[in-house]
Length: 420
Image (cartoon, rainbow, N blue to C red; front, side, top):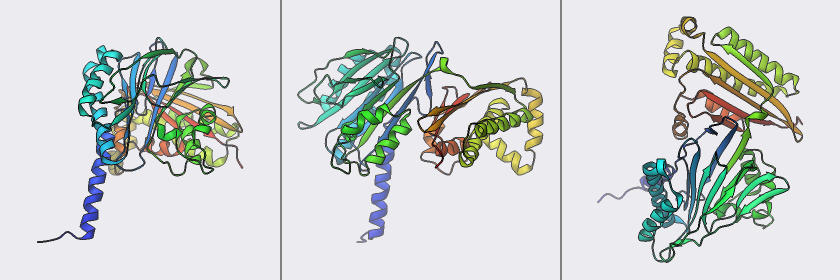
């Protein structure tokens, strides 16, 4: 009988772990992946960011953020108590069931009815000793209301100002074979500008001095303008997390505060190049160092060229590759400009002081057909893809990047530290 070698055993184990990792990520649904949510009145945007960092391949944590309609979304964080296979299976089963429910009832979503259905399902599938910590939240953006049902989860933080941070504590015991009761509470988010939701892996992780991260949470949340800046603060202090860490960081942006340089150009390469040159000059004039000027100029160029080539002229990545190989790209530009130069590209950019550094924000929109932003999730696992080049470049350089649901508008944020 042939016995597998150690190398074959390792290869098999690695393969199984990779498949388990993919299965866990499949259970995570985010309808706002690199997307912003625009209120129907076009007055405000919400950035809905999620971060998932498992302690091991098999994780007891999972989450999803789902769009219900133009006015509302629903999201959850699950923390199956324990570690390893059992906790991972429980969280995947729970998450998959929830996402299936959302897919079937999103147009007629009722939070208490949904929770009752979920509890009935989970009680039949939990072991006697198993407990489940869960956070269920529905946000109505038009009514500016938060409906919360939290089962032994850490407090939610709502930020209004540095003098006003509201804590919303859990209003239910954890779900178990012996507990199916639940409460739902409502809160106003009219004056709220950012929100934080997390599993206990975040607040219970140890710092180098032995303190729990909970001691730093409020200050780090208060001083973070984005999810990326918050995560940077977190992982500068937590080198080796003790547990899975899942967190959701939501930020509101008021469009009525939009100022800076506002431009419109037609879908003509000469005009696009002129706008690129103007952007470079603008950030130089605002004291941005040479390295950041070069990097941010490259990101801006990539984004506006995407609006020109793909959005306005309708040239796909595959077509562009073929045209370049045949030396016909510029000729195709001229040909399509004759058909599409009536289409406009809209640009806005602004640099403002922030602490010892500066904040840059720019957005670019076009009048094309857009694209499916789901491609960005695929790029996480397919590093060989030639698609999304501009996105890949931007993701490495900037702090935040968000697209409209249609994919015809992009917003970029970058904090530029003071030059040393």
